[in-house]
Length: 109
Image (cartoon, rainbow, N blue to C red; front, side, top):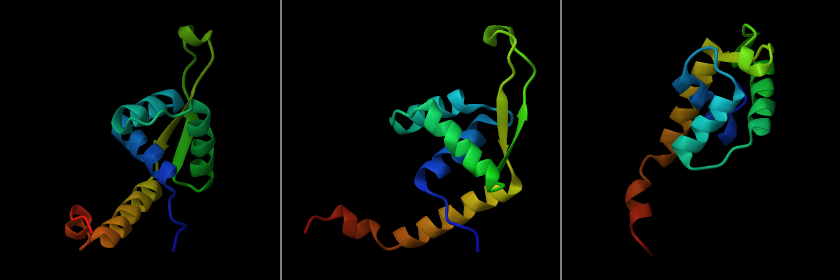
């Protein structure tokens, strides 16, 4: 069994899925902030992207150089099939844990 994904790892992977292939850290941080209301440091995203790549959950490649970056390339990522499966497994585990709890969470004790 694979190591469980942490919450932030899930957010990063999900943002990458939403944004599509060949995305980089800043738009991922922006997407997480937009969807969750949580401010995210691009540095935290880049550290997490590296860790996810080491785990085989995403792959990266260098983009073509861009004029707005002074001719520098960006490291772009895409979620691998293993990364998608890890997201599905995490979702199933959370769904299983939440099952049967919603009514009790709505009532005060």
